[in-house]
Image (cartoon, rainbow, N blue to C red; front, side, top):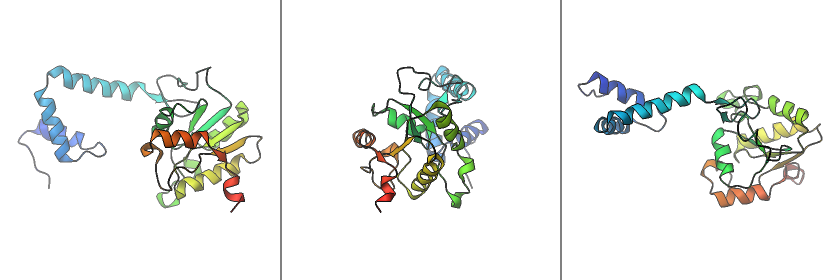
Length: 208
């Protein structure tokens, strides 16, 4: 049973804020009360920023990263190496890898990993579009930068098999990353070195 605050408007504000991940009702109440103490313009600007983001940000038709245009700034940047694709799970991973300043190629966001227990199969991910992109654009290297988990490794192997017939080098991040760690929480130095020292994906299982 949730407590109410003798104000339907405050109740509603708290209910809406608590829909955000990691925000419980106590935190939502603290945020709502903070906004009440601010000038009207503060709440208006926050609200408008969220509306603008939701209405005008879409996904790049090439890499599936967020974009305000049909093709994102990374994909349209002629200074980057358009023959190298770095495959990641989420948009947050693009942001994390960009912060290392070690990758000058492009990205491909597949939107998750294969996880039968969660009902996620290959067809739920942007893997076929990755294969088409490699074929169409003559990609020379695909870097598998999925999180080092069982599901991530399973997805790596699936992608490798899908690309095996193509003349493309498939590499993966060097295992300076601990098993189970997510890219988002890995320090930039470790992640940057893992990207620089990437290895052929085939070497990770042929030597076993």
